[in-house]
Image (tube, rainbow, N blue to C red; front, top):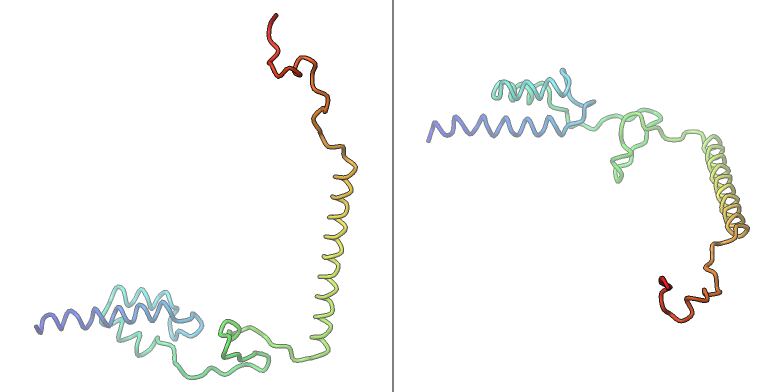
Amino acid sequence: MLRLLFFLVPLVLSIYCIVEAISSRDDEVRNLSKVWWILLVLFFPFVGSIAWLVAGRPQRAARRHGPHERSAGAFPEYDRPGRFAATDPAADEAFLKKVRERAEEQRRRAREQQQAREAQEGARPEARPDPRPDQEGESGAEPGPA
């Protein structure tokens, strides 16, 4: 039973540390890069796991946000380093105005292209079957050699 314990504890510990190292963000891992921590835990399971827990594991304290970064707890995909929030309402309104103008221009071009396509289809005569049946084909019999 003691032998099993000496086998299971390092195994469970290394699996836990590998999963935690893989799932942690690159910018939060301490002292080494994420890849080096994973390799350390894989090649030296017990020592690497202890080292990961002591020196590599991300600290779970709340990260301070920069002056232009937003903090959106409900939307964690927006709460990442480097994602900036608008600080100047006038610049934000100018940006939104340009976006609206560009969208309206794209809609106008799409309408013009659609109208041009419809005009081309209307001007092009469609291939219609000849409404006059062949004189030989009127009887319904296939024309054959005489």
